[in-house]
Image (tube, rainbow, N blue to C red; front, side):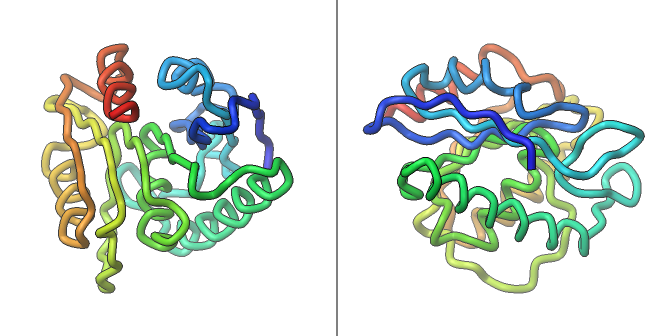
Length: 197
C-alpha cells in the first residue's frame, strides 16, 4: 500500500490518516498537522479504484458497501498498519484512527474488528450500512465523530445508525453536527480540542 509518514515526538500520538473517495496518502496530512503538529502522521492510500478514484473498499452503489471486499480490505489495512508501527518502532497504544468519509467508514470496521488494537478514533462523516450481528466490546473505545445535518452523501438516518451501532457496544462518543459532507476548519478544531483533553 502507498503511504507517507512524518515522524513526530515520541510521547505524542500516532495519527493514521484515512482519506475519502478520490483522496490519497497526502490528502489529510494538513488535517493531521492541525490536529497535533507534534504527532507522528501516517497517511495511507486506499487500494481500490472507483472510476479512477482511490477508495479503501468497493461499493456496489452509493450507500451500499461490497461487504466481502470491505472485510478483506480491513484485514489488509490492519496488517499494514501493524507492519508500519513495528517497522517505525512506534507503539500501537498511541495510534488514533483519523478518517474522513470512506476513510471513516473503514475506520469503523477496524474499530469493530480489532478493538484491542484501536481504542481512539476521529471519524469525520462516517456511515456503516452493514448489519453487524456480533456484540464486540467497545467499552474501551473513545470516538469523536462529526455528521452533517444536510449531508447529501450520509443521511441523518445513516449518521444516527452508525452512532447507535458503536454506542450499543459501549463506545464513548462525542458527537458534533455540521451542515453538510464537507470537512470544515471548525470540525478539525473541535477534534483537536477533544484529542488534547
